[in-house]
Length: 237
Image: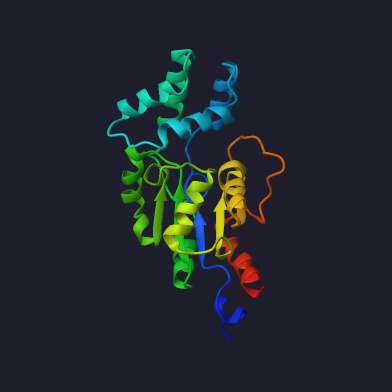
């Protein structure tokens, strides 16, 4: 007899929604983080601080052109060498969007989750200028029940407000949600802070970044399709 996930537990699921980060979780960033790290540290700025400033400057507001986005980005780094900033900005934007694609197991995993009755949700720190283009290219509406962008909700992960926006939108409790993402700072720390279950995905080519000691996920996986075992465990409790 074929056993499906629903046969593993009786009654209502404990986990009702699986929330996914976008970059390095569902799709590659296509940013060369090794080069970006070298570039920023050569100019006295840790790559983690660069990324945090970039997120606040470029992923909170709504921009109608690359030029207005660039202007907002430059304002976030007062007094810093403009040539360096232009190079760093180019590094983030040069290959990031045009070559975007799903990781091999992503589409099947998302569709299977939906077929098994889970709410499948996207929560992404991303830029308004390209988000809808990426969404259309990859047909996100086919895979996600709800999509929350930082520029729409007015908060970037790991701000609690970003995760609370999802909880309020879904009308769910934190313990009914599992957050899946690659970043200990943005995804795991942020979701932990509001009481969500957390799962970190660590791929073999994960980008270079600090480990943020003291931040621990409930689970660690190497591929998105491993999530079904975790859901089976959680929903039996």
